[in-house]
Image 1 (cartoon, helix red, strand yellow):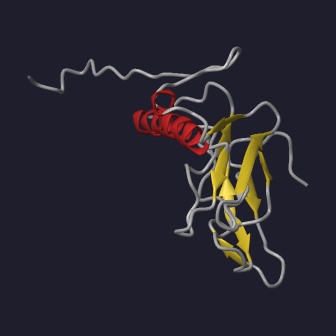
Image 2: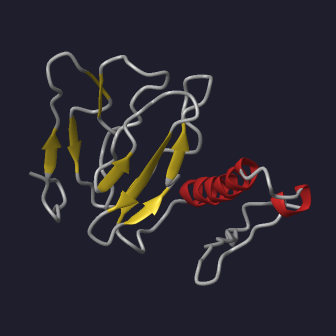
Length: 166
């Protein structure tokens, strides 16, 4: 059974039932930065239009159908924070919309690349949600609307190294 907490260098080994193929990493190790090594482990049987998007460590997935326009939704457990897309939609191309979710401890430090990816992912997710609502006006689709009690994190990156010349 999964543990509630893992220590640095703890490893998890995954196996798939007979008739399923494994995609991703068979062994994942807890890293000093609070993340897991490798790729999300997925066991799939080849059915459905999109492949199984997997269940990232520390999350729960709702939705088990992988046909075009079907959705899967993710939530994090044990006080972890979700980064990436909380909802993904199976596309006609056979890929999933949005970005792969990841559950991490709050206040995990990000690299500049992760900040940029999460910012873009957040904006894309907001735009996709507006696009799926056909009753929303074109002007409204260009706005970022945060519901009462909702939050949006915006990161600013400043280069103080003087590595950028005029």
